[in-house]
Length: 351
Image (tube, rainbow, N blue to C red; front, top):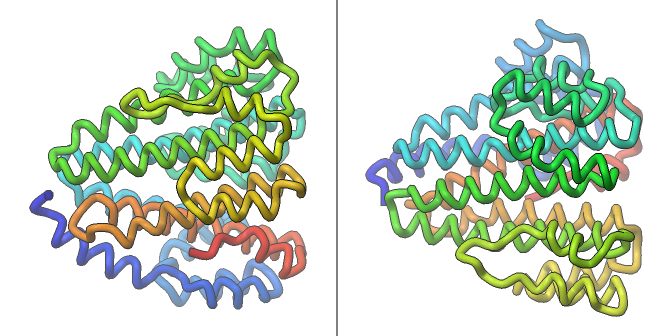
């Protein structure tokens, strides 16, 4: 155990008490516009950052900028509390949101629907700042985006360049997305082995194994109906730490999508996943994937229930804070777009 954990635990518990409650999120979903969200946040720990955001941008964009600044500030505060090995772990973890933004841009380019809404929905909470992401969003295709990343000496350049020929020959995003995910989880595994506390190592490895399993279940949902050779599909599943076996070839060979998803969700040994898939597998693929992602977020935040004097509480807060920021962004842009309350609430993740 790190000698800092009693202090870190006290600080995080105080920060946790500032998180917006599900009741207040539901109240905000009943608001008239983004200004209602801004007025509410002005009375919370977000206040100073919302004020700064509104000095830079008008309306919903200013509110979103304030939310982004506050989330990033909290991430930096958490990182700076940690010992050196813990700091590195958090820095690697933050790459998750950079990768999410790169994928968002690649998907928009691939589908030919790049517009201002794509840029507005980028998280920009890592080292890829919003201005940099806006420039990346101006690139015309994956090759140009990768070259721009290369000019910035981005760590993502090498893995994306290696996957580019397969993307260009197949016109499928799977090679690029898999390359980013594989590199990210491999780096997380390396960072976990560098943690000084054996308990922290065990916590992170257990979390990482489950996280990769869930990512692979989500991938199975997207890959099952793809018209590509089985061997190629199998190559896109993420390897598990410590060379644990992955049964996804068997799942892909199941006679029906429902059978494949039920088997994969059941293998997670988390009852909530199997129950959700059983109730939603016959619906739309989009709603199934979104529901699984919500369960994944709730499980990540449930790390609060583990040893409070370990890295578990740190990871739990990082996920909880990010989820709060994502919920607030949904509220801001949902109200700005005039979406009904029921539609906005369906997108929120309560945890």
